[in-house]
Length: 309
Ligand SMILES: [Zn+2]
Ligand SMILES: [Zn+2]
Image (tube, rainbow, N blue to C red; front, side, top):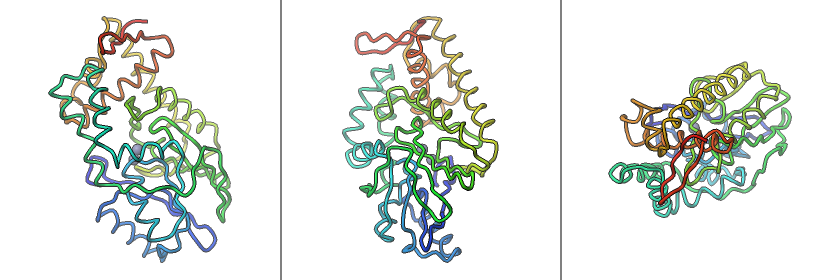
């Protein structure tokens, strides 16, 4: 991928005479060629892919879905909460930019920065074609394969309809972006997120924690074992970040933009993508803290400020 994160992993699961593909990669020539080369190596023609499971609709996971479905005739399967995000995100992005502009100003972003940040997501559109799914998931569905069912495990947080796919017979978890070996996935409050995504995310980690897993196959990075200790360190990371925000907000009510600047010193200067992610991430923590009663959320004259509870 032409991003800071260089690779996305997609997985192929044998299913009788056919195969199930989990995620697709970006809609770029490089990504398409890499996928085709690996399939050729495995002697799997596209026509034998019968089903495509999508963990969530971010471009690196969903980008090639429309094209692959068209070329293979595979059934496209996605959680229903992701479907509602597709149109505004990729087909009617101009409307979304308008919503994002209002959201930026409400959270204290100065108009000069807001001008750059609001368009930062538009670039993602070129890496995706929107595809109507054939089958919608809600969570807990058992999807049969030759080696036992894959269980669609709804894990909202990183995205509202994110799904992991759990394979109990093999004690394998296809974790998408929900659980990654090195980085903690971006959990952000923004116009397309859930209303309290960090609380959702921590709840989803708890759901995964209870599963018997010997091997996690993540969407980014190398496969890993011991999912529970990885979950513990991610939970710890969010706990510390929450404590830092409570301490900062104790100095007096501040906007999300002001708090992000202090919480993510250094990161904010890098580029508009980082600024946007830092703001979303800060707000997700503030919202979770406010829901718990540990921060006060003031809305006055079109501005949201976070202060002591
Ligand atoms: Zn993602
Ligand atoms: Zn990803």
